[in-house]
Image (cartoon, rainbow, N blue to C red; front, side, top):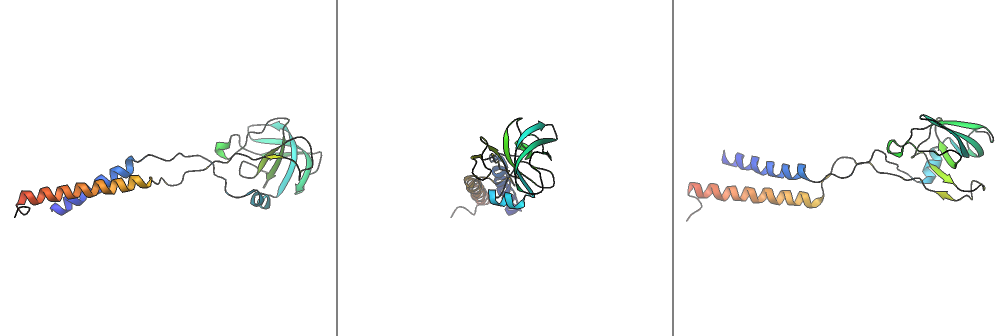
Length: 172
């Protein structure tokens, strides 16, 4: 009976430490993979200037085509959510981008880079899109786990000593 009570107290102490540990920051979007992988996954890669931005998409006047069936001089309409938190992208009017897309959609993880002054698509300078991470399961820092185990062990040891003294087994 007492052993069961001691185990309950020890587990409760450990559980409190784990639950009370500080949470890691969470972000809504996670991009995995290199620029090469993004290019390989894309079915279209174009360089163009943004001619239209809506809440659901973007229109690019195509200047060059690296991959896919887009035509130079035409406007390519792509679906995109605004804001990087939802893996979208905040395009700016009259700004040049190198844009990867798949199935008529693009976003932060697809591969979007702002391109400087008009040059060939392969030699242009590129500013990398910011990537964010997403928090998976909450994993407490190691020191919180060690601290919790220590507190639980000390609490259990204290209760064992107190129980033995109460029954008289702790004295010779």
